Length: 337
Ligand code: UFG
Image (cartoon, rainbow, N blue to C red; front, side, top):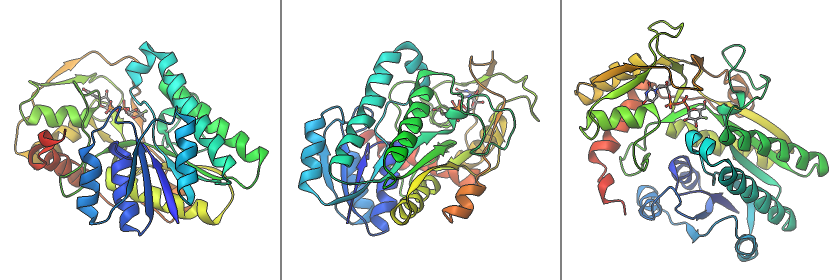
């Protein structure tokens, strides 16, 4: 039985490929390298000692997807391929709607054509916008606040409608909190182009001397130390959540959303403190204004995934920071073409 992974060379996709290969699945991977590099595919195979079938292609090319489905016995799909930068989505909304929605529509159309109804979709906690209360459960209202988040929320709606139209569909939308860290080998990790937007890649580049200091976006939130609190989750825990979600969709039908988070929140200062411990470097910082659109506190209630998927996050922030630092320093990251 083969599983198609779209966007399998990306940050979350590549770590999920490792977990899927380790779990014994045959993988067909497609990626257009819009935000990833070809070496990642080699490294996934090196880490696991297993091979996968790779296509360099975009989901916007419907004929190509059709060809892939006709070439292989595909049983299920894990769909990551999408643009994901919040700021860029505000500047270029059409690009985001065009890419993220059309890709998914094409994929679902071809899945339907070939009678493949098992789908795990890469959603995001961003669909909750500014939540009324924390921890956030899956029942919290969906009110994304930017085009990127709207594409995730709209896709979840499309998938609900698909299931209503045909109850053969079995779909899990996984709402990720803040994925960080890297595979323990240091061979794959997050490799943002340009100046990172997210906290951990930024801290990591300050520690390595690539960036002079961290800008902390606000120290006057109503939190223990005034900085924003998030639910950071180790990328390998997130990857194992996909394997569990896939096992679930293979034996059920329906459409379900699951929070993938640890259920614990940590502040920016806590993350700096732990990163200084693991890297033995000082993280210089400067306090800035709040970043527009940021919320004070965001963390998951992961109990639905704990019970229904029999999954829970195992790794704490020390391991997350340690593996991020290993990737930053020992990976030969620079060697990735
Ligand atoms: N932060 C800084 N300085 C930085 C970057 C971030 O102080 O240079 C702070 C933010 O203000 C926030 C925390 O660090 O308090 C985390 O910020 P990130 O940018 O790392 O993460 P966000 O929670 O803002 O957003 C992330 C993803 C989104 C996703 C969302 C889901 O980037 O794509 O989580 O909750 F939608």
